[in-house]
Length: 158
Ligand SMILES: CC(C)(COP(=O)(O)OP(=O)(O)OC[C@H]1O[C@@H](n2cnc3c(N)ncnc32)[C@H](O)[C@@H]1OP(=O)(O)O)[C@@H](O)C(=O)NCCC(=O)NCCS
Image (tube, rainbow, N blue to C red; front, side):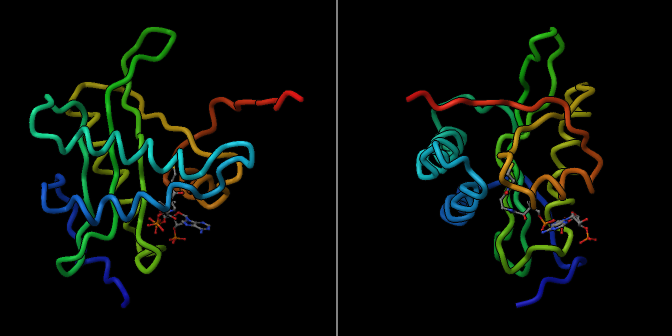
């Protein structure tokens, strides 16, 4: 299936999108460091998103999906988060595009939706983290205007 850019709609997530969103989140194990459990990374993302779907919880942040011909082909979550220097900024927690929809501009449109959300909140920065091994994501973020700000080091003790 090929995805035509014009046929993709980006909209706020709905309850019925939940199974598709949870499936897409399995892509978040990409490039995870060898000393981390990739399943735990995926589970943590699923838990955060499950909290967003839960009707009893007051929703914070936003989740947007990209839909092509009725199929959810991408998801992004964004939240407000205080940087340690003080300002509240937007933080993209999860971003995933279905493999068959990759390189058709879906990721770019989802990030743009998260940025529009941030602007509506009056926030000036959008930040995110990605695994050092996830070179695809790093190329993507650079291509859509993001600049590297920090590099995290870890030593695994004997
Ligand atoms: C990273 C990801 C979200 C990109 O989504 P996408 O819809 O394929 O990206 P787009 O089509 O909008 O690409 C926009 C630009 O990013 C760059 N880009 C995207 N994928 C790339 C790749 N595999 N290699 C090099 N550059 C890439 C290109 O410059 C591209 O523009 P172009 O296609 O006109 O050359 C997607 O690959 C994905 O879901 N990966 C797995 C999950 C993940 O790693 N999420 C991020 C974790 S924080």
